[in-house]
Length: 349
Image 1 (tube, rainbow, N blue to C red):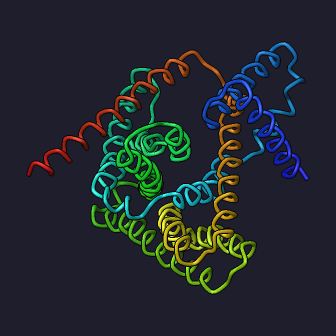
Image 2: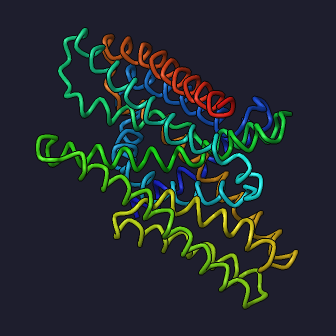
Image 3: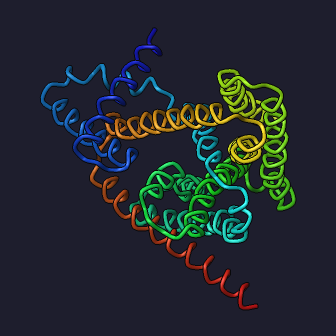
């Protein structure tokens, strides 16, 4: 019952915040909803200082939500699949080199820049954190949000090749970052002194390669199933089962679920839509996943905003957070700039 109540509150808030944003702010849904969530959280924190019992239930509800599990085990698979089915595989193939460079090299460079910078910054604030955990933060914060990017690009009038590069990179770097995060996390758990370069490389390749191969198998299996029937209700359910079942299997096999979802989504969104679906199925499939995408994304950013309710505010942490924002932006600028220069060199060469 407690879980149902929490989910009910999130759905109600999603509707209210979505309405306010659409009616008044007119910002991209993810940005507008997060702004409203943060403002609401700050108002509740201020009221809580005056009337502590007023927001006690709200704090208990937020504390009872396992944010990392909801994001990593539930939301991420749906969001990545929903974004991937919108990609044009042919255009994606035409821009494969920039997408690979930005999503892999860019994320790795940014991870190490952020990790190293935060390690020394924390030392300045006399906060001792092992370097490996600073790298974990770097892997966590380095990828761009694919859903926010796609939402903004829908309204932006930019050249199509550039749009494909940005969209493809934002989807794949999310999967790469998860793989990198899990690799670093495993190193942190067993100890860096017990892990060789070969083992680390094998772990990384297993996550990436296994995720891509499994995603291909998953997507092609779904395509074959869709091709044999013509019932949009059943076909939509098949794609839903593909995401939920496929992601669970990928996790149990210790391969990259996010990359599996991106690859499977690209196959269903291209080969599936073109050769295995009627017009009515295609329209209903796109509408279904657009709603799932929008709803989960709004819920995600509401949760991010309301995390402020359970954060202990200290002046040193606020200063650290502000500096960290500039560090992350600078790391992103350097990683993208380096990748661009590398691509220019490759083209000239």
